[in-house]
Image (cartoon, rainbow, N blue to C red; front, side, top):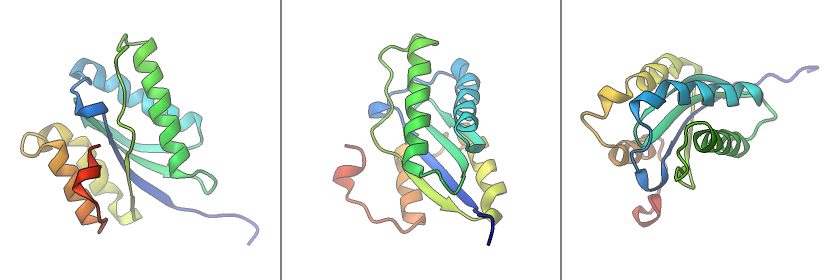
Length: 149
């Protein structure tokens, strides 16, 4: 083949350090847009960004040359710097790790809807229960002692 064709879709999830509720509703739209801009500036496409006071979900489409670890480093680092410098959240930090789960093209619409409905979703289930359910859904084994570390 003379060209590279790649469909790399990731549902990414990460939280604030210690799941502190630092993403206030007045900041959400600006933060989601900023994260989308970081993705765009780095050759990624954010198909959806959303979350609540203590975590973020992103549906990312990556190029064939972008590793998920690099994508997360750019998004988390860039958004943290923006929150410090532009929003005055000097004590803000993201958790160290993240979840990145592949999805198929047929799951895009449902994942976008899921991300858009985070506020409603979290009236029934907290972030910790949600994240453990996502790990289970994807068949990822984990040691509960190290998930939140």
